[in-house]
Image: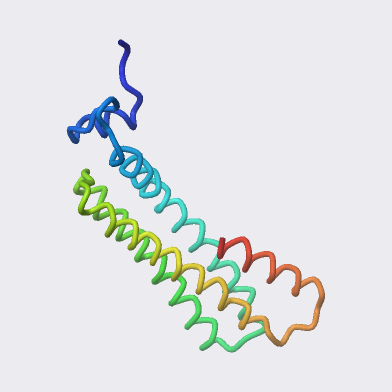
Length: 143
């Protein structure tokens, strides 16, 4: 038998072998993959938010843009903090998995709300190009 794939080594280190994984191993593997994606998602979201905040300053009040940007960046900080905590501990056990899944869902919900609220920054614009662009960004980033 050759070496185990990376995900199987991680679950085996927790005492969960591929043969005896049962219902726990797939959940742990999925949560680990989701945790690995959180920093990248946070960086992408924050970068795009900064760009759109700069554009929005031409069309909305600075207070409204700053409020939206602060909320959006806070949602990304939550995402980073959540992934940092679980990466630092380097383990997921069954009773933590449900709580982690709920926290990941909540952080995604908060980020989705931020992107949905971005449409309010461009509410005064009549240009069809901006209408399409805003809808595209809201749908893409909220997803």
